[in-house]
Image (cartoon, rainbow, N blue to C red; front, side):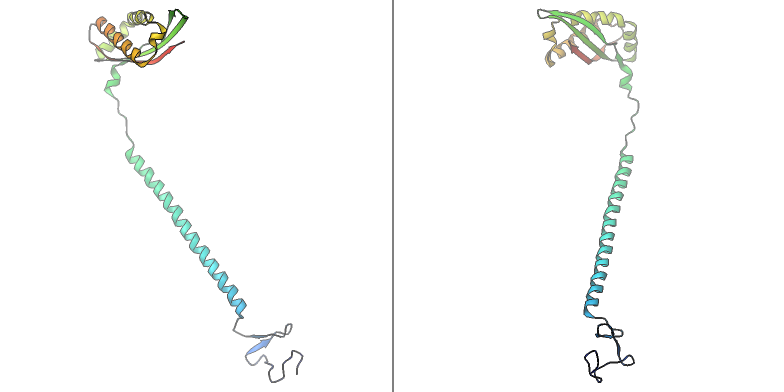
Length: 188
């Protein structure tokens, strides 16, 4: 019996099929791996394979989203609307904002008003510009005749708007006002 526990006939030498591990006394055959090593290698290869497949899937999904975003951007560029000059805006006229004192039994109030007028024709707009002071005086007298409590609410503003349009249309000689817009209407 030899020092590694094998008989001389059982001992395998270098020139036969393998090599004996001198430190542990285990037999390691050339060209063949142990089962533990094969399991470790197989696990490593499969882990790398899974990581590569996962990376490819993630890359495809992320690049697909960026393609969708680029498609959306292209669609938005196609859907972009170019606003051309609206001829109806040529007939709009803004009166300078003004303040009017109001009184009622509760005390003194102030009305801050800004008005835009929509003229039926450009010539009416020119006449409004020339007679702006007269228009402001007429509007002021109508607005000051109201009590502050009567200026609250939608219905009262619609009635006031109608009255202002009718008064202005009586004044104008070259045409009519189509509409009147309150861009500011505050009672303080």
